[in-house]
Image (tube, rainbow, N blue to C red; front, side, top):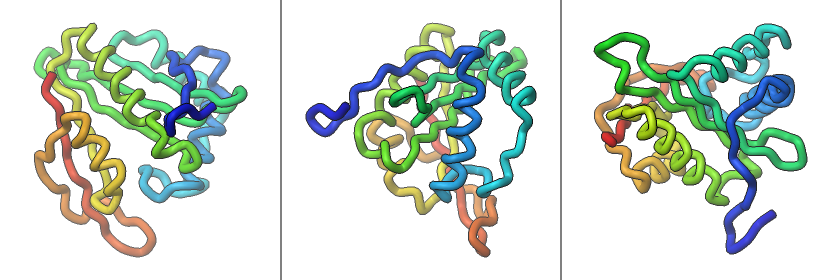
Length: 173
């Protein structure tokens, strides 16, 4: 449901019963956008493998996965993967994905707010992510949310027959 140009749906932690719809979402996201890591058809876990991954995100305190649903279908998510050593345990890598039909409706900001609250609750100091240089909409969102550019990974990915750069961004909490 849209209100004032913003979509109002609950964002919640993933549950074990969400594994199949989350896998379908991840595959749909790969098919509908060229800004995610995997190419269409490249993500091929079995239902059991994806269920195991979801369970890991639920059981481990350094992992988190929030989802957004519309009529029982996952339409967006944000993952946080915290460091596992003494030296990096105060940092988390962030991955966000929203189906194109649901972009520019405020969900990205709400997902980033949720991951930041999770990080602050755990005493984390740094959130980091990478974004494909041409993904100007996502870059603008991250900058509005306080992420700063730290560098460029030159020709780090090969997509659509060409090398593309990734922008490294981080936010100190």
